[in-house]
Image (cartoon, rainbow, N blue to C red; front, side, top):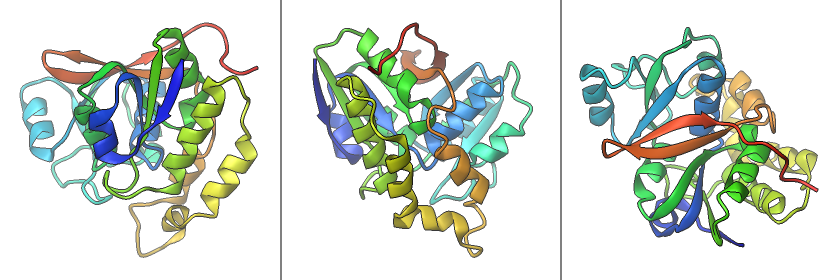
Amino acid sequence: MKVRIESLLEGASRATGSVAIIDVFRAFTTAAVAFANGATKITMVGSVKDALLLREQGVGHFCMGEVKGIMPPEFDFGNSPFELSKAPLQGKTLIQRTSAGTNGIVAATQASCLYAASLVTATATARALRATASDRITLVPMGEEGVERTSEDELCALHLNNLLEGRAGDVHATRQLILAGKEALRFQNPTLPQFVPDDLAIALDIDRYDFAIRVDIEDGRPVARMEKTAGTSTP
């Protein structure tokens, strides 16, 4: 098994084998919270227009996501894991659009097996990737808008790489390095009310959930569902 780390939208389009698209702040943390709160599936799209059209067609009950960190006015929910943790989602289907994460999923057309990853599902994602028995695994941290690398996504990729190669990694060090980065500061900035401190706390709760988020193409669209696998991926 060979593990390769790519980055950003260009990396997503190049990624082959079993692929994990990583978005810690906050797309795939939010998606994980939505599943934990009862959502059954999430259709991932690249644009607000596509999300609204699919909701109109009855593909999903709710639209969630952001443009430049802010919820579009026509959406039902933003890109906040804390907000989704309080939402009535049992049995509901969602449509998600974000500036980095879901666009990375849409771009990953060469993947033989695809996952949406973040720190809250890290160990379960590594376990799921190893279970695919692929000879190539590609990890793609999406960064800011899919064009600029960020510490939380790059460090999540390194943590997943450790797990995949049989090392436990250092959860505390990973968390502290992210907290020292500029991206985490947004969640303490009162002029950016869309970034709430509770979102940061959830996003850095490493292995909060014991499931991965598997993405399959259905009717030409990437559709995510919760996936549980047996066993462990750490020594």
